[in-house]
Image (tube, rainbow, N blue to C red; front, side, top):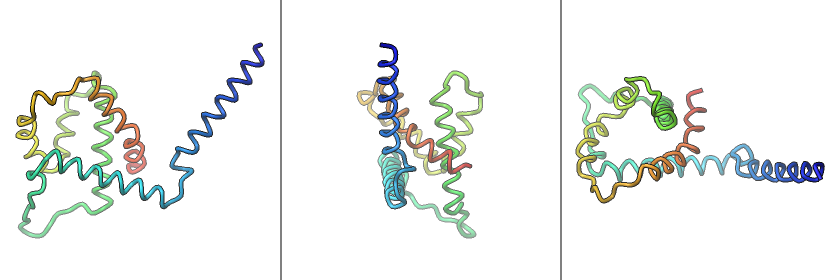
Length: 153
């Protein structure tokens, strides 16, 4: 009986491994991965625009030319922000005192300027239960954090 249970468990584990291999990005070709990354970038951009409204789309004029990060710098910057959010979400009780301030300072100015008014204007009736917010954050961070971690390496 013990041997049959052992074989059954091995069979179950093999099915699980095969399922995970099919879902893994390592088993996908480059086109599928790039397509997923484009979807992620598009969704993230859309979510930011929906959250900020017109305040997030105001163009800033520079005096002596733009001071921009470039693609690699911008990717690294946002990867660090995502990793900070992951640390805050996974260990909210063990945070250094300045962690939230550091995260806030890392946001672009247009988001920092729009955030207070946007948070005050939200309906109290739209407030979600903490468990639901945590579940949604965990679900998003589950697939987003590996990208951010690989970007910072």
